[in-house]
Length: 204
Ligand SMILES: Nc1nc2c(ncn2[C@@H]2O[C@H](COP(=O)(O)OP(=O)(O)OP(=O)(O)O)[C@@H](O)[C@H]2O)c(=O)[nH]1
Ligand SMILES: [Mg+2]
Image 1 (cartoon, rainbow, N blue to C red):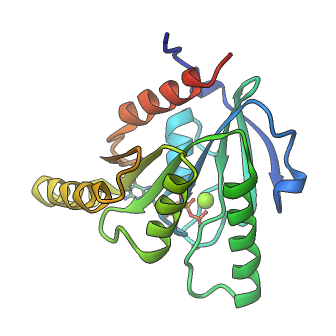
Image 2 (cartoon, rainbow, N blue to C red; image 1 turned 90 degrees about the vertical axis):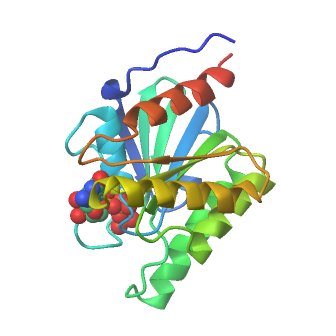
C-alpha cells in the first residue's frame, strides 16, 4: 500500500454539530480526537494543522461542547470531539455530551482511527480506559498521545510512556502510545505518520 502524505495545513473548518444527525454524510474517512476536558485536543489539532485557531482552545475546561468537523481534503476529515470527565459541568449537560460522544463512536461508519489524548501527568482515568476499550471492541485503531509532555523532565516522561504502554498492551488491540506536546512540538511527526497511514489504508 502506498502511503500518501496529506497537507494538514490545508485543513478547513466544516461544521460544529450538537449530535451525529447534524453531521455531513457518513462517507469518506474520519479520524477523531477524544480525551478528557482540557487534555489538549484542540491544541493538538491546531499544532498538526499549523493554524493558530482552527480549533478553539481555552483555559476553561469544557470549551469544546460540540462535535467539530474539519476537512483535510475531500472525503478526509478530522474531528474534535467534546471533552469528557469535567466535574464542574452541570449533570444534564454532561449527559448530553456523553451521549453525543457515544453515538458518534458507535454509529459513525467512516471513523477509521481514534486519537485519545491524556495529560501525561494524569493518564488512564476510567473514561480514558472506556474510550480505548470501546475502540478496540469496534476494531478501530488507537493512537494514545500523552499530552503536555513539556511539563515533565525526560526521565519522568519516559517512565510515564512505558507505564501507559504496558497497561494498554493488556487490551491486545491496535494501540500505540507516544508522548506529545503542542507547546514543544513533541510527537507531531508520529501523529502525522499515523494519520497518513490510516487515511491511506482506507482511500479507494
Ligand atoms: N504546557 C502545555 N500546555 C498545553 C499543551 N497543549 C494544551 N495546553 C493547554 O491546556 C489547556 C487546554 O487545551 P485545549 O487544547 O483547549 O484542550 P481540549 O482538550 O481541547 O479541552 P476541551 O475542549 O475543554 O475538551 C490550554 O490552556 C492549553 O494552552 C501543551 O502541549 N503543553
Ligand atoms: Mg477543545
